[in-house]
Length: 301
Image (spheres, helix red, strand yellow):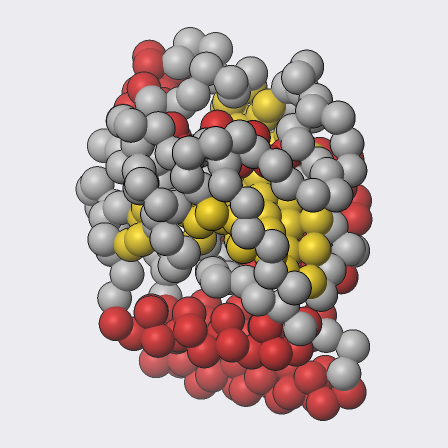
């Protein structure tokens, strides 16, 4: 069922993702509603809790050799953030020195394990805030958008994720192959979970720390973003999508591998579903992925 309400815009005038008519998708179990952003007051039905005005916020940023990007990110972090945790994946450049210079209050912790998923889990466990926000360190995400996520988390929602594919969002960085892969993976997810999400593989998310155990995260790589959404859906969390603009990485090269990581995301989505067919496909993909790795090892020597 779709319910339309007029409300104040959540995108600031100075935000790269500003739009006169941005949209917010709210996913609640198997029902979805679209909320237009226009002139007026926020009037969302069935808001479950009173706004949590005193909630503290922890921001988790995984880094590895992001010295040229991290200063831009830290300079623009919203005042609503109480704790910034930099999870370092063994940087060999001036990332940590630069970060400490721009934010002397920053907390730096070493990453446990390898991969983005391991870095995020390390940061989540170290966070002390009531709300956890995760974002990248490469300058592709606008820190000013954090307040949009917090708005919904303090007004009855449990898990908020950015979307590049709703009104007010967008991507200046996505390649045709990644866009096609995202559409395919999203179609699979929405079909299996009877959902109406608009973006699956995007790492700008926020949630209440009290749900960390429920999310039960274990993915080591980029597929952790899909794992979070799968478990949030399965746990019955109230999910909102907010518009976000993905900008080009300011410097350096991404570690994302479209095909390899796409297969991992698909495997995560299928494994999380309780269908026997989905489980079979996930096992088949897992065996195929392992076989490719075995074949690739001798060639890499």
